[in-house]
Length: 170
Ligand code: SME
Image 1 (cartoon, protein in one colour):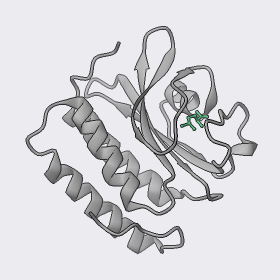
Image 2: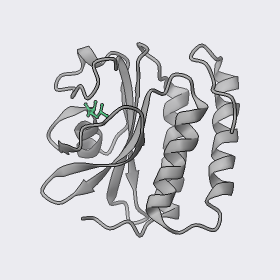
Image 3: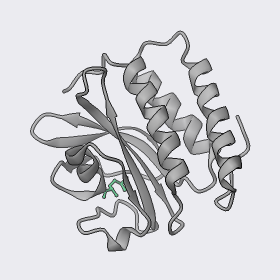
Image 4: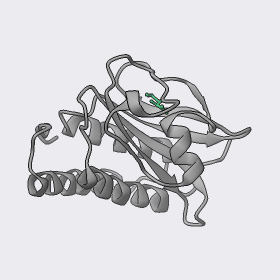
């Protein structure tokens, strides 16, 4: 496992670090088809590789307009989130990444942990373009995530959705 990248890393170092983590994820999951194993591995590899990731996990799309907690690392996460609420709900409703530099300024943000200051949530689609899940990273630092995190996480989540399309919609 790589040493954790610090918050103040420059864009080139950050891109190179994401690329190395992504290579490691692809190698670890090369012969794996189980979607839970896939999620757990993606979460672990990313969470341990970035010093500013303080909560990292998936929320799965389930019936009745809700998101349900999936594999994660960090302190306890909210178990169930209505699609109508929060940053995760906004990513799920719009199908667009939500980059939130200051969670206090985001109307309807759900505070699972009082230490969270910034957040990024990336939607995950299957090959048919249906929303499977959202990937949420929270940081205790303000404005921890930028367009490099967004571009790299979108690439990793596109890979996940293509590699593990069998995930059931509960
Ligand atoms: N902050 C998120 C909720 C999930 S947790 O922070 C782990 C939101 O507003 O959707």
